[in-house]
Length: 446
Image (cartoon, rainbow, N blue to C red; front, side, top):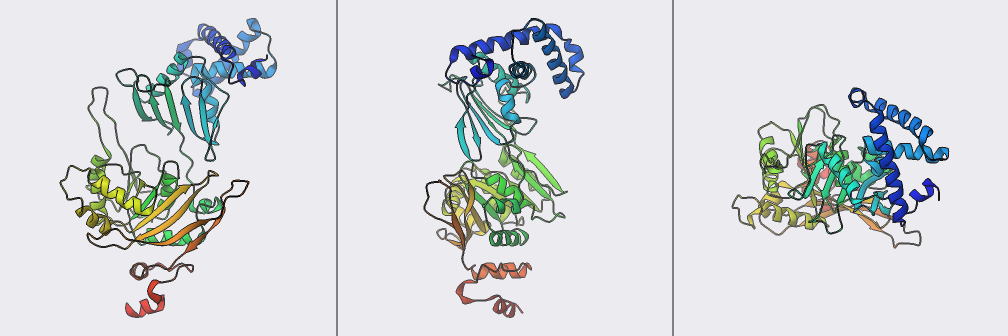
């Protein structure tokens, strides 16, 4: 069996170990041949080129008889082991992969276009996987061992990394690498079917009119992607502060301050939370605050900021519906150490949140805005929303592709008035509730 065919066989543990041994042998030979001091002075591309050249001479001089393709593959694997992340290196180079999931040395999954698939790749041993994990976390000055068996970090290149090792993980060392997608524009999202032109016009009006917007959805529904796209609608002259656990947002405005939380060090000290950053951001004279995700007591601080002079702020929250998003904000706000009655949080949310944009990932992997809802409740009354856009899906057919249409409903009169005062036109697809048209509003406002 050739080297290439052995590498493509996921269920042959013996051949995987043989290939791993071959890679280890030539990695050791390579280290004997090179001058480490000289290599450290080279750029990354030059270092790889030099190693490939030296390794090619080694294999040609004393290596096994291989075809040209097998020889190239062996050289790539050895250099990847020496410089990079071994079998994960080609996966990181594949732009179509958005998530890499390693469930022990023998199981590697990836996500492409919203679909998860298993790859015919494996690590030679648990030890090799642990070496790869240690190499990853060392780049961000973190360590992983039995005393610290769980690590969540962001690589210098931007990927988010999560590691869990035994004894917490019963399936062996697990590694999850989330690659942030490039920044999509709203027009590109329309091309992908995530929304339509009328919804874009409405969302643009909301952002420019300084409505407070919550982007809601489950894991992997595209909340950060949409938040990033919506931020392009914010005028350049405004001072924007972004607050995130792992910096993912890629705002293009000139006046942007990016803040990122920090986990505790090995001694358990030095932690800076999202809440610390939200509270500090209020002292930085922001025009708008964008919180990548609210998940705890910082929710109360964010709500207070939204309702006390920082209109036009944006945030994301994990929730399965627009109504659920408001309930979750109430629950998260109660996690603050500030002793505020649970019912009183309704007043905070009703006065702070204007719009909830609900996202969902469908059976075919597509991500869509399934609802745009306006918060119409007041004071401490039960949450009430008015849906103004929704995605109506057709029954699935044999090809499992999700099809449907976007439906648009009239806007509440109070919202139309606010848009008019802000100088924002009413998108043609949306009427005005209570049979009130824009001309009447203009006459009423003089």
